[in-house]
Length: 333
Length: 246
Ligand SMILES: Nc1ncnc2c1ncn2[C@@H]1O[C@H](COP(=O)(O)OP(=O)(O)O)[C@@H](O)[C@H]1O
Ligand SMILES: [Mg+2]
Image 1: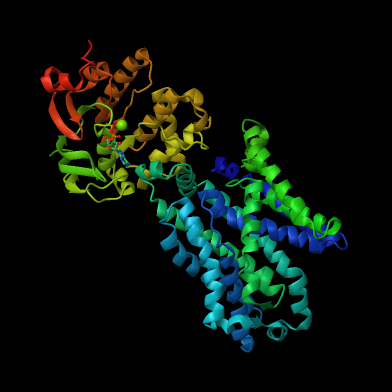
Image 2: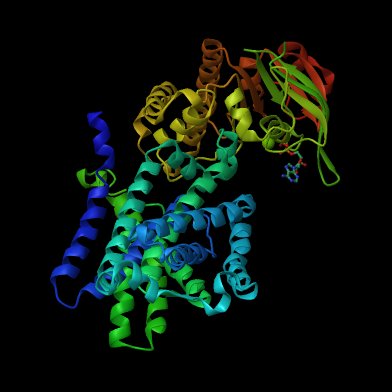
């Protein structure tokens, strides 16, 4: 049993970074916004890494899970606000609905698309996000393109003051908790048969099958897990921070691209990678927007290309290789 | 009861008949060599047995169970293991992790956890002589080491039938003798039926197989005890230019 505790050492550097971000944001004036943004990108990377990193499959519709998660929270607040007995439990129910929505959507998408191989899967998912957005707008589901606005309901549930603290502070703390949870789940997977199966299928799907691995099942496990965390990120960072939701804002492919960049920058399939990727991406984006507003993308694209060319396995992927046989290696996976 | 039984199995690729109405039986613990020139359908036959492809015609039975349309991942736990002609390691994982995957999802799969699988892997790695490379990334091994690792990976599945595609291709003749002895001992100790496919290395076949099946252009032309098979005029014809060496 004693040996087993060593298996979870690699969480230490991940949690340490999250703690430092939290403390810097809390104690240094004017820093909270930046820290919250960095935590958001880390969480996004950590969630997406469970699928993209561990399976090697690229899902271009990933943001749709954040979108439906946002709706899960928003609909709970809108429909349950007037049940006074529920009180703040509405928020808890909202998170459960976020998981439920993203799980259902990912099961539906996964059951069909995950039978396809690599590139075909990627192409199939391009349509998912746009399709879902048009469905909501066209069929006027969940108030269609007018979206949902629930500032009033939130105030009603929590009181004006608490609602504002929720938006400016607790919502970000929840993002931190989600990122930490996603990291913990990643490591549990890595250390279990699931992780071995995912590594095998990522490296060689046919060989994995012949060795007894039900590749579709394990891909779905990774997909649904990753999607649930995306749903939770959406619910806290989009629904609770900004109490409204409009389809074009949450089904915005731009976030999928950001998530892919973060995972690749940091090191796909590594535990610490999304943290490194989230920090590098978030900080560059922030400072470029201050010093070179308008030129972000022009500068950003070459930087990202350089990093990916220099470190094809990502920053942490490279570190991991270098530290393989050293004492530090136990902490970097 | 035969361990493996093929009934009139045919596999086509478009107009090409890669495996043509092949019937055969392999008994538990038997050591069979499959020979045939390049393109004669050996690999395709293995693919049909391990479930990579389903045949257009005919049926495949494993321990009397019809597995013709069973997906490959359901065959492995029944006891069908294989190696690939060109090794297919899980490159980023260590040798130890590669081999442990075999234990985790093979015949033992339901009974063993990750730690037990890693222990099984260690034993087998030792057995094939890769202990020095245990923690290396599988992608960094030499071709021969990769071949050994694939064998280890397949053995960790505790198969009843082990299909070895070109097990000795690319090996130095001195290594081949060692390998032949190794596989032979192993098959005997573990009671595994081994179907080893060899292209030109007759020496290996003579050394280890009890029975030889000869394929030519997708059809089985000979299926007989080794000595008899190698004296068959049809075999000599197929192998013109490659007569059996002593
Ligand atoms: N996946 C495939 N698609 C199309 N043709 C194939 C495929 N696999 C094998 N073949 C063809 O089937 C025939 C038998 O090939 P193979 O089974 O690889 O022979 P061997 O292993 O005896 O060299 C060859 O003509 C080969 O080109
Ligand atoms: Mg072949």
